[in-house]
Amino acid sequence: MINSIKIGASAELIAAADELRQKVFIDEQGIPYDEIFDGLSLQSVHIVAFDGNTPVATARVLKDGEGWTIGQVAVDKSRRGEWLGEKVMRAAIDYIVSCNESEILIKAQQQVQGFYEKFGFKQCGEVEVFESGFVLVPMKYTVL
Image (tube, rainbow, N blue to C red):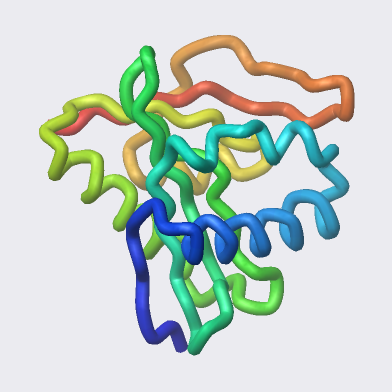
């Protein structure tokens, strides 16, 4: 059971989010370090769900030249099936909507594209294939 979802850009939240991203994307999925740790964490807002002091789910929100994006959504392997990904995604969407934004972009891992479609995201461009074989699908959500 999660006891809190925190949203912000503090060093504590960045460290918690990075710990979980390391565990899920690099250790578990074998994605190269530089494809995950891209230097954008300090410019981002982090949504982190905690069970006690342990981060169990996270998402990253970033406003850049193209608008708002949600990225690097990760859930601890032992906690999947508990709707934690949905909870951090909803918190990320709500945060962006509260900033009066009407469009949200993501680059979804191809194998979880359906997860984002449940929120109303639709593919909006060509897939991006990395040297590692990692495939991202650009998707867009429009606030009604």
